[in-house]
Amino acid sequence: MDANKTGALIRRLRMEKGMTQRQLAQELLVSEQAVSKWERALGCPDTSLLRALADLLDADVCSILSGEMHVSRKDGGNMRRIRFYVCPVCGNVITAAGDARISCCGRALEAMKPAPCDDAHQLRLTPMDGEIHAAFDHSMDKTHFISFIACVGYDRVLLVRLYPEQGGETRLPYLPRCTYYIGCSRDGLFTFRS
Ligand SMILES: [Zn+2]
Ligand SMILES: [Zn+2]
Image (cartoon, rainbow, N blue to C red; front, top):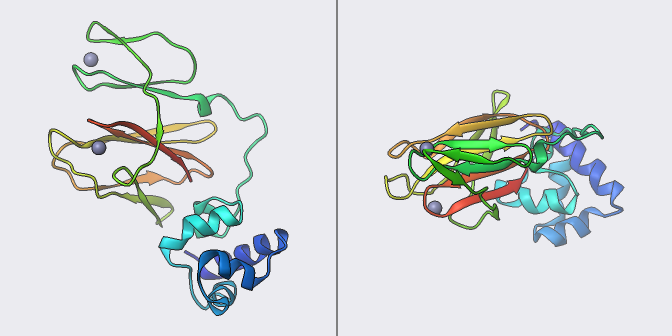
């Protein structure tokens, strides 16, 4: 996090919203001085506040962290409509950007229906060396593990396979305003937007 850029962005977005430092502080249950410090780069918002702060400012968490707003192209392509298919026999993960008939190991596969992330299926995202470090607390044993994490931008998909017994972390490329998907071997597909 670049405190100067993050602070300047918080200030700019807060003023665009017509909010005072006090109003923003009240929404976040922090002191007015805390907001003032962030904006003067004398401190950074606690990571537990980032999501609420981003929501209040109509920004994404990555933008708050990087201090930069990335504006997507207007002709947003089809990747936003991506679907995920997982073969129950071999574990193959297949994606399609539109309607498709997918089969594997002799079975037709149904597109997984993504649910909003719940407490058990969440990622903690931290910018690191121009990438995003993603960590999670979910179990990674053979019967119940995170089998993939995908991030979907307007024109690209990056899918990382994960395997039982490996640690609860991986690295993802930084994609502005992307949608994350978390595939659980037992509980299905979860999603959130950065
Ligand atoms: Zn298969
Ligand atoms: Zn699970």
